[in-house]
Every structure is written in C-alpha cells, then in structure tokens.
Length: 386
Image (cartoon, rainbow, N blue to C red; front, side, top):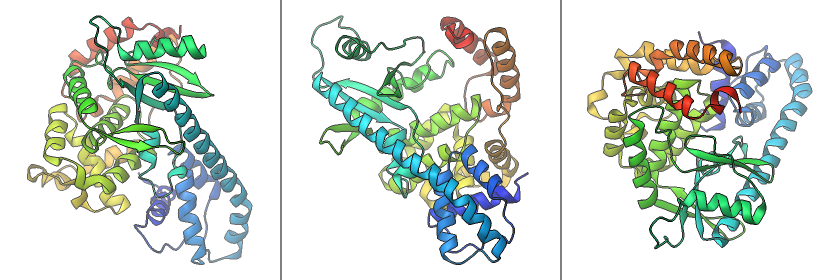
C-alpha cells in the first residue's frame, strides 16, 4: 500500500521536475518521515527542490507547520550542501582519472552516474556513488597476445600510482582513487550468472565500441559517454538486474526516465524494444514506463511503446503496482552476512524474488540457480568476504 507520505514524495518530485506547477502541502506534515523516505529512495535534494518551490507559493497554511519547517530546513540544507560538495569532488576525480588514462593511451567511457546526472534538472542534486568506467585503447595494439585493455590499464595504475586493483569480481576490477571507489569494467554484465548474459554482453560490447559520444570536462579532457541506444538499454538492464536481485530505488528509476525524456528522439526504439523483449525484460521496462506516466506525470509518447503492448497497462495493473510497491517497500533491508549465513539469506531472498526473475530474464529458474551457484564458487570472496 502506498502511504500518504509516499504520495507526498511523488508530488514533490513532480514539482521539482516541472510536472506539476502547484502543490498545496498538507496542514500537518511529518518532516522526519519525509526526510527518511527521501534518503531511503536516494532523492533527498530533488525532494527539497520540490519543497522549496511549494513553499515559495505560500503553501504552508498554519504557523505550527511553518515553525517545524524552519527547524528542519537546516538539516535538509546541510544534506544538500554536502551532496553538492561530494558532486564537485566526484567531478574533479573523474577529470583527474581521465587525464591519467589519456596520458597513458586509454580513452575512458563513463557509465551511469555522472553522465546520467546531466539529464537531471540540477545535476549536482543527483547523489554520487562509485565511478564506473570502460576503457578503450587510443591506438589499438598491433601485437597478437597483448593482454586485455583493462589488465594493461590496471598494471599501469599499479606501476605509476602504486594503486592495486582488486580482481576478485566477475565483470570489473575495483580500486580506490582519491577516496572514491572505481569499477573498471571489462564486461558490462556478469556473463557467469545467467546464460543469456553471454549474448547480452556481446550486444553491449558491440554498441560500446561502435557508437559513443564525446564530452569535454572542465579541465579540457575528453571522456566518452555511451550512445543513446546503449545508454537506454544498459541503464534499463542495470535497473532490471538490481530489481531482480535486491531492490530498485526512485533515484535509479529517475535516471532512466529523465534520460529517455531528453534523448528519446535519438534512440532506435524498434531495436530497443526488440532487444528488451529478447532479454526477457520487456514487462519490467513497461512497468517502469507506467510508473513514470501514472505517478510522475511523464508523457507516455516518450517511450514509443509498440502496438503489441497496447493492453499492458490494463491487463497488468497488479504487476505494475507490485513493482512500485517493491521499490517503496523492499524486502532486503537486512544485511546478508557472510559465509553460511550469506548462503542461507541469499537463497531466501532468491526465492522471494522469483516473481521478479520472470519479468527480467529469459533464462529458466533452474538454469539460473545452477549458473549463479557456479558464479559464486568461481569467486568465493562473494560468499566468504576474502
């Protein structure tokens, strides 16, 4: 069930996004609950933007609420100022890292994160996290048997900066650069966790190296952004994987929706929907679409829904609601632990999430179970924390 506080959260996001010009705040408002909800969904700054706009319209109608807002405003502002500070550090770190790689013969493609923030109304009001990169050679090596690009890049990182990358993960190495975690992707999805990920990875690799956009950072260094089609597919798939395995939050949902709104005319929608269907995630994508339309007032036409899905909204109302309800009330809030506890807890979560698997993957449940078991055994640190 969607609570009144959660409805208020959506209304304030709509105001911040310009989807609603006016909103009268309720006479009584639990500021602490609203703040916790916004933090849980990773959208505190954009909710504050909505509040600020609503408050300038004189929409707090009693002195008690006005006084409580004045008391809480410092907490909200402190949070937002910290986010803006972290964003500036994030941007500076990306620029320095891109410079290092360029000087050593690599072009850096930025995935998710910073490149998606450019589609938010106020980019530095999107929370920052890890820096996800994919590297390509400026000049492809001519010799046969030369190690993969990411391996050579990690070696140079160690030789020149004394930074050791952690290679215990399936589709990226991990290191810390100037206090921020960086994931250096050699694959875009874990090819060991699902059989279908092997062909999906090939699609992503082909798109990554053949289609991309250049973006110049403030220090004059160029980085690469994924092409509109690749971004649309990759972010949708990333959201789907998060949703199926654990949970999705509103910030991740907004990343995809806001990108589509700004770049929908640049996307090959026939190809997008065909690939989404083959991946098995078309129902999940449609759920994201109708949450965007029904709860955030985005135009349905932005998503170029094929005729074959014309009845989806009416026939799958329960599914759409279940996806939204899971975003707002995730089932995996507790720590998974390590070792045997991890195995037990992850198995329980996996069973709870089987309904999600059916709208995200084309693989059978049985093949997925054994593929994921093998995936964990290949990288024991994912279980035992070694």
